[in-house]
Image 1 (cartoon, rainbow, N blue to C red):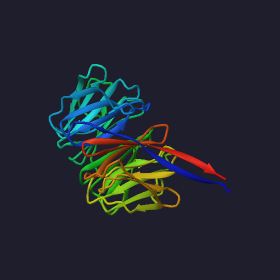
Image 2: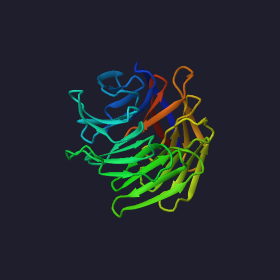
Image 3: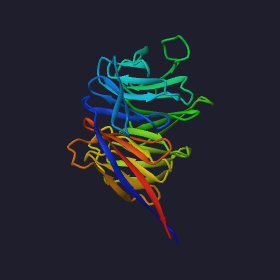
Image 4: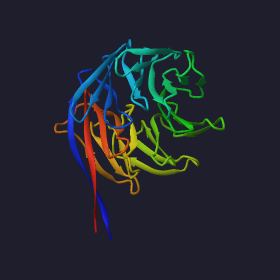
Amino acid sequence: MSTTETKYKFEGEIECKQGAVRSVRFSVDGEYCLTCGSDRKIKLWNPYKAVTLKTYGGHGDEVMDACPSCDSSQIVSGGLDKSVILWDVSTGTPVRRLRGHAGGVTTVRYNEESSMVISGSRDNTVMCWDIKSKSTDPVQCLNEAKDSISSVRISDHEILSASFDGKIRRYDIRVGQMYSDYMKDAVTCASFTRDGQCIVVSCASDVVRLIDKDTGELLGKFTGHTAKDLCLESSVDCQDTHILSGSEDGKLWVWDLATQKVVAKLSGYRPSKYPTLSINVHPTKNCFLAANGSSILMWSAETNTQS
């Protein structure tokens, strides 16, 4: 009988010097990462060498989220100034400014081909922007939510949004259908598992839920961390075997997806007085980034099989 054991190695901490880091995101190839700061700036990093490659400034308020395009030539960002900005990565200049939201933009994503941008806002709407056209108006506004949008995620044919109104909503673009699941608590993050079969849902009530995407059936509950009404992010690792979540205690919590048991509470070399809010998993390997205060921290995971 063989067993697998996962060990986590702390790879280091980067002091970003951009105020509180609101989100951290790997590039599509995992070679770089972006950080968004309360100082209204976005920074492009080589996280493995702790080197700043570029700083992007142009938002009029805190930058809440950013996402790199599929070819890493552009970045889209959203801020509390209600604007969505497209950036040229190499020159560092804004290419386009999209204004349509009536509230701060909390979350942004490209679709798979980076032809569309999806943004979510405190104005309770999700907007879809065709960035290949010259139009500055959204091509669609999804306004079913009754409270702020906390996260959006995109698959090849679906848009998944989470809202503080307690619901996650999944829009099937192919058939023009919307499906919703009520979580009873404010939802701070919802994301697809890597196989696309399930959804990981973070709630403000100290619980992460795993639900079946098609039926809404509850498959698992992951608890132990503290949310304290913070907008915590969660995710699966790149092998769909572990659930990860930020926490008010400043640690990155890791559970076994199958057994729902806590397997690790990851922290840096020193205790943190800040919560871990934003987390991101490398696209192809088990390497994790987490935003904590004005810093980002990185860990890697190694799985050993013992017979």
